[in-house]
Length: 227
Image (cartoon, rainbow, N blue to C red):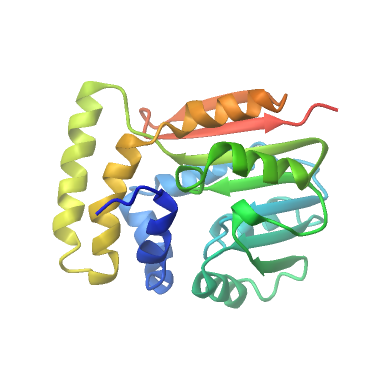
């Protein structure tokens, strides 16, 4: 059952899913996870430092390192077994470090040229997360937030709802993922994270650009800290 605070879902979703996460996220998004992450990467070019919040098993972290190999990258995640998986996968990347922290209580003591976060926004309080990001970003830097969205088109909604019913049934054969397939669709339907983060970013004076992707099933917000 959905909790009042979406953040309470994180342990249920992620404490026992690290080993299968990479394949599941690719399979359940029909490979669109890679496409969405490429859209994040399109925002990066000459940054010297990047903070990847909710880095999970390091999928996006690795892609950032490969696009801008000169950059120092810090991956942060609240779930220890996901971080261990990321460390194991990316141990050959000398310029990547990992920290076990909660994004809403972030305290790294340094600033970055860019902050990325994929699949994190829906779990957090917009004002809190944006404020923490601003404490850790250089002037002129970017905050790039990505997550699922519930499509507005009625026909796409029908397909979306039908698909998650299928995932619910699949969950009986994948017990580690069953709770995710039960609670995630409701969370996506009820969150209004795009507007909430746009409002929070505007309140802090950021320049905002939003991209709706894949028939409205995913979105990216880029907030630039104006010098």
